[in-house]
Amino acid sequence: METYVMETFIKAFILTSFVGFILSLLIPKKNETIVSMVSYCTIGLQLIGTIFFVGYWIYQGHPEINVKEFSIFKADDYDFYIDLFFDEITATYLIIGVLLTFLITVYSRYYLHREPGYKRFFSILLFFYLGYNIIIFSGNLETLFIGWEILGISSFLLIAFYRDRYLPVKNAVKVFSIYRIGDVGLILAMWLSHHLWHENISFHQLETVAFVNEHLANHSLMGILISLLIYMSAAAKSAQLPFSSWLPRAMEGPTPSSAIFYGSLSIHIGAFIMLRTFHFWENQTSFRIFIIIVGLATSIMATLTARVQSSVKSQVAYSSIAQIGLIFIEISLGFESLALVHIAGNAFLRMYQLLVSPSVVSYKIREQFYNFTPRIKTIEDSFPKKIEYTLYILSLKEWNLDSFMYRILWNPLKKIGSKLNFLSFKNVYFFFILIFAIGIVFIYFRESIPIEILQYLPTSFALIGLLAIIKGFTERNSVRLSWSLILINHFSTVLAISFNEHFDSTHIWWYISGVVIAGLIGFACIQRLRYLESWISLDKFYGHSYEHPKIAFLFLLACLGMSGFPITPTFIGEDLIFSHIHEDQFFLAFFIALSFVLNGLTVIRIYARIFLGPNLKKFQGKTQRTS
Image (cartoon, rainbow, N blue to C red; front, side):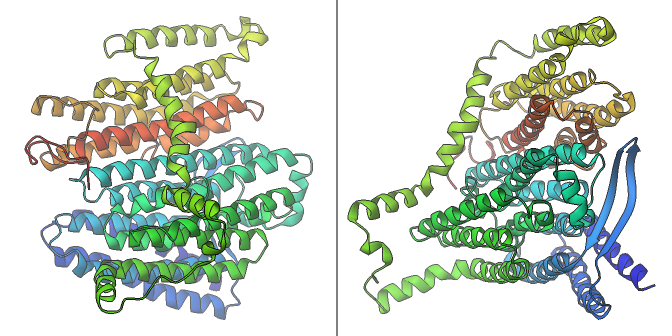
């Protein structure tokens, strides 16, 4: 009976968040009181429920609760099921999350009064809180990935909250690109885990040491690779090296969203993943040493950078990065309780600092004029001058992490895209229809093709799809061409996987159905906008959401469908696709995973360029490249 009550409470937490979000979408935006009251009541109800539930849970001896809710899709040894899990880690994150979100909701009711995006802010806040709840209650990687995707898109929308400005929109796209890198780590980790366990494993099963060691005994290399991929996802989400530069850029949103997202909750999700998977990699000594080294390097780099920042928000951001680096070290050393206390303390402190940041400037000006104090000597003054100046310049440049990411990732993609300029909207379909026809012929006569050739065909067609999406990502003129290349990439992925044996056509329809519907809706929106406006392209931000908000919202839904967001069967289809990739087909998995990353970036880039940024007509036909 006690277990049933607690399981019901766990489901109610997620259901309440979802209902609150849906209600917030239905309320007229002009009624600020009702808009804020829905958020206030939703989070307030969650807060009351958390107090009673956690108290009752402790009274019952704080047992671990694992709830396998239902299977979305099941076939052979594959089972995509929703699994919920509650223990000390979830309890800590639940208390922190609901309390801080409630405080932010109360604060924002007055802080954002008469802001044009008042309703939009509270809807996104509830959307974020829904994703946060799904993550902390998740009992397996598949359930966690649903909340992970919700967190990513809500981050993008909140950073770009001031959507009539250039810099917030640009930084929102930049942050989303880092999040997508984290996505590829999680996708590949799920793929390798499926081959390691031959089932969709739950976090509760990972706590059985004998079970984990039995599977890792003969697959130690695969275990290290899965751990590194999980760390890559955690590092991207928590702004650890080499992804640290995105966090200060995320502060372009309103102060309340900066406090709740990047000061307290979202920034600690990476630590949550590491805590959840600790029993998987706790016996991998080399990996634990790696985390300690990178965590220490991140803390040192972030501390030095924070000391030279001229912006209060940037200083708080880098200070938070430094503390999370230490939290990663604590997790690696096995100090779980200490890490949870550290997470709670850092979350509350950073939220407070960011909420008072608008007042800090006036305090500093008053102190400068009336309470002047000479500069206090620091530890850097004891260094040789060359070292001191070198550290100072590197810290000012934020250790060139932005340019590093551009050099190793984005610039090579742009060079490849520039080599594909022969593709135009007129010839792209003819070119790829010819390739698909050849691929279908190969599939039909698969039995007659020599095995030496057949084994390279899946990777070859996945590479063709990857090249298509690279061109779509770097396209700067035709919106229709970029959108078409996204569709071509999806169909190329299906073609590549079809060569693997035992591939069920039902899985293809799961994957492609959402893509086709979203693709047609997107095309309809683009054609409608082309009819209403004289010209649209991808060479700059047009800000058409100012004049066409309904088309912008419909196109955003189409973008989410095209990128495999958890509102279409494509989300399940992506996981099904990876379940058919063999463990020795690493390049095939890598090409498809990279395609998914660029796919999401391309659709968000199209949406941002067309509908966000300064509106040409509103700003007299001139877009300003400043904040």
